[in-house]
Length: 182
Image (cartoon, rainbow, N blue to C red):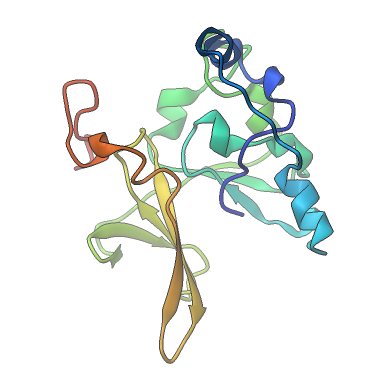
């Protein structure tokens, strides 16, 4: 499962996020969370093996606690060093400890040997059907995904997270320099 969108109870995000939302007067309304959408479409949430966070921003992380603890949380390289521990252990954290507590937190490691185009790639199932792509730039640990939907001819769905969120991804500045991995 790629990204969880906005959690319904966004007021329970870490204070560093909710305080900024109040200061900036950001409004947010989420009628359904991803679990509800899956259930409405006859997909059993307990069958989800892993949740992939494209990156740590609150509008992508949703509420992993709505999924059973056997569901792994999958993140990009550098995530653990940069964002752990979560809130409340770290009062300035942008993620919650409860997002990953009691579940496998799997940080993807990319090798230079596996590529899709110019992107370092991780063949998730080992059969070429689903690739996780290393795409730093928007944030530390940002990842994208590519899912094969047909063969002969091959066609794919690209899941980009916020890969092209704003111009800084293409034009690094002193505020958003090129990631170390580039």
